Amino acid sequence: MRQVPVLDLKLEYEYYKQDIEAAIKRCMKHQRWINGPEVKQLEDTAAGFLGVKHCVGVASGTDALVISLRALAIRNTGNEFFDKNDEIITTPYTFSATGEAIIRSGATPVFIDIDPGTFNIDLNQVREYLAENGDKAVGIVPVYLYGQPVDGDGLRRLAEEYDLFVVEDVAQALGGAWQGKRSGSVGTAGAFSFFPSKNLGGFGDGGLISTNDDRTAELSRILLKHGGKDKNNVDHIGYNSRLDTMQAAIVLAKFRYLEEFIGRRRKIAENYARELAGIEGVTLPTVLTGALHSYNQFTIRAARRDELQASLREKGISTMVYYPYPLHRMKVFQGRMKIWKTLDQAELAAREVISLPMEPLLEQPDIDQVIHSIKDFFTT
Ligand SMILES: *Cc1c(COP(=O)(O)O)cnc(C)c1O
Image 1: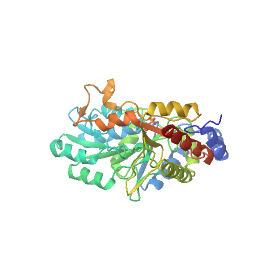
Image 2: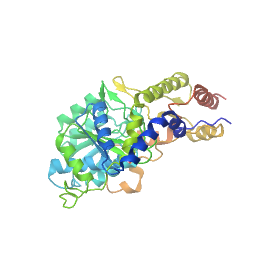
Image 3: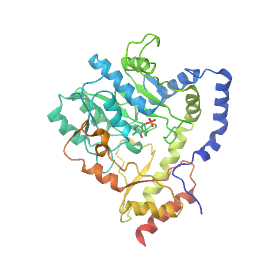
Image 4: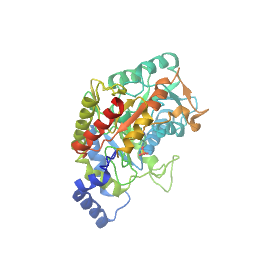
């Protein structure tokens, strides 16, 4: 039986193998495993691509969130951590790392429900929340789920009006944009991930912070190296969170394929959207006018989701559920979060979503097989 994977990293490796093997060989030769030249080259390349002043490589996307939030705590409060009374607004419908990072920065996450069409935080409800609690909120961490940004103009207006920082969780959104402004360049800082399944994945963990703010960049660089300009005499409670030279070299080698691959993702998404439109039981995602979606995932809502997933599995088609548990249902957040009104849309999404195969190098017969199998499931 023909297998259709969600992602096929072996296939991709064959595609750009020469570039990657040459990059690894250069590392072998220079042996500068810590802060080798590729780290700065990647930071500069990413800063150019995003149109930001600074990019800072770190050890993971999670660390990019934690370190940028810690940098903002130090910059804005003069203390090492935020206070529990400092609130950071975010979505409950994301990977656990988003909420975890807020708690690790000392603040309290406030979960606000999502827009059912985009799966992203509902900015109208954020505005409602701020109208009553604007004095407690210090920042907002919007997540560009599956690769789609939130309305960047609306976001900026809220941030200015209520004097909030914005850390964009762009772990899934490298290559996306709002009205031509790259995701990760709209807020105070952006947190990217090079986890292998992200749009630009390394061969292990890696991450990057983007920012136009000099002080945030400077503090992030200090925090990722134990908390001091001199690691033998440190000023802050820091981390060991350098981006490996080898990971930087691999990500850098893949960087030049990024736009081509996103173009391929977009084509697959258009194909799915065209062919799955109008099937009873399937709801397609909404893409906002002004949003450039990077399609880290193509995620639909499906009636009888678990049955559909099992039926596709029988036909050799792999799918994923991002995410089966919204954050406010997780044990770790009990007693450490605030909830605005209800989170019904996040709960519903957790029961209905399914992410379809989204391998940029997938061939048309594979895409057709996915489409036909979904049609079959709902019509027979
Ligand atoms: C992957 C991901 C992260 C964390 O990135 P890691 O590199 O795995 O630490 C954070 N937020 C979201 C939305 C993610 O998808």
